[in-house]
Length: 330
Image (cartoon, helix red, strand yellow):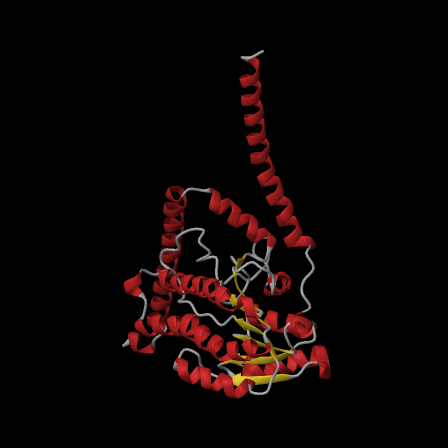
């Protein structure tokens, strides 16, 4: 009996550890189903305020988010560089939602304006408004896969200004309003190029700016959460927009409208970094499970192929232009 008892205890301990190990993924899956499909979204207007700011709102995810926010009854401050596109977006929103939604347009080129000037412009534009939600969606990337030294200096500067400087200074302008009333929600639209899942060679500057947004969101969330401001970075993977060049949507490449609907379900919840669209979440799970030694060479090879196709396309365009030039016939 004395020898059987330690054996029994050993089997019992091993069984308990096995049960705990089994429970962890099961509970994780149950939580994933809850937050992706069953958890009710917050009433943003009730929780935070009657106005929302959306940057980069004339195309893609930003435009779709503006429409989704309007459908929830929020008034909109629309921020963009093209006044004609802003007016067209405003007209489309008013056509869909009528007088129930108020709008205010802010024309500003985030790539050519200093941080302090951006902040001052935003402060003047939102003075007296009950700002409840800020969506820092404006983003810029260079076309085609390129090595760092091949990226035009002006393009690199613009990417840093739009993706980092503008988001920082607009947030700096809005936070005091939210802090004063002790409530608000800030959403920084990140990217799968930096969600911590893998490296992103040949788009290095873009990915690095999105890494900044991830840390920026994580840190200021801790600074302001106790006074009622909920801050998160949302991570889309490929979405069918002008930036990604995908023209048709699918299960794993949603339209901007599909992504925006998933996005609003997450606003105001505890996750400082989240992947709102559930098929993207599955992709991220797989990416996290794979070792870097397998992912990195594959991704680099894939983007090298994209770069080669880009250079070939540019070469064909150049030859066509030369051949169509009448001076060549002389």
